[in-house]
Image 1 (cartoon, rainbow, N blue to C red):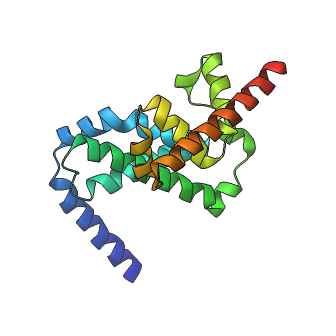
Image 2 (tube, rainbow, N blue to C red):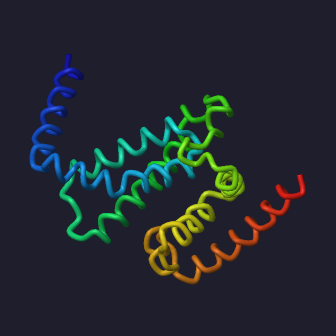
Length: 178
């Protein structure tokens, strides 16, 4: 009984907080950043369903708090929270019981063979290296900005990027040989 009351009370809190944000604002933010959040979640979890859950959790968390004042802070917040939620999913027990086949299939928007091959090689990299490469090359962040997002020094990011590039090159060349 108390669980039902808590759940109902929580639902009321969500409704009150969401009423302060216009539907237009919600659609605009999701339209601008939804694909980015999905790509980050997917390249970390390699599972479409888990990625979709993460996207929902990230945007729910965003809309239940005051929105960041600038686009730069909003984008950085979304990236940081998406990476953290992805890391939580990877560490969770429910993740360990999924069949491997469900985690490998890339989203349908990445059907071109060259992108799928790049994605497969990217998946072979460790978590932090994969995120650093993605943020640097795909999102266009500088090493300094990535350092702030990943909570590392700029020099540590340069080293991480260098190692990631070397490891990626080795993986890519091994795939070409097969």
